[in-house]
Image (cartoon, rainbow, N blue to C red; front, side, top):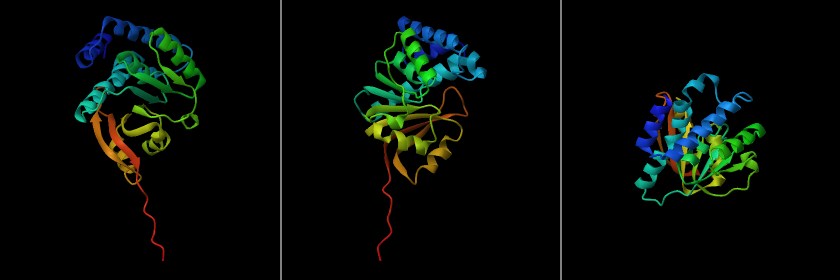
Length: 221
């Protein structure tokens, strides 16, 4: 997907201003510059950066809006992105929306990049440079994670950062459905699979009301 094709998609599905385009361009320029110092994304995806990473991140926003409208919820206010790495989807969401976005990334060089990229794009974000299990929990309206951890481990670590109606938007590969099924013995909630607009082999797990199942105990004799 070219830059022009990506901007057209963004305008049609989200709506973007000239200022937003400038912020996206600044972010992309910062990422390209940093690639000389660390591998932020796979080299094979650099030529399709706008499709594989920008739009792949941005597609989560229409899903969030659709979910809020379906449940007649108030607009979400804050967004937690786990394992933000190169800023996907966290910084892209921050550029494209007015939500307060918090990024969690434990790798020092990635944290330094996220700080530079957010500054270059003129986009305020909160960056927590620690492992998630070492962070004081607080509740977020939306939680995302792109290649952060297997689903069961992700929910175990991130559940303390959710509230009853938190929306989970979790990009996964072709094993998304299998991964979701494997968690049903331990977790319950409203879940569905959405196809990715950027890769027919990938999918997004959309979940709400996630909580651990009560484990049955054997009867005393």
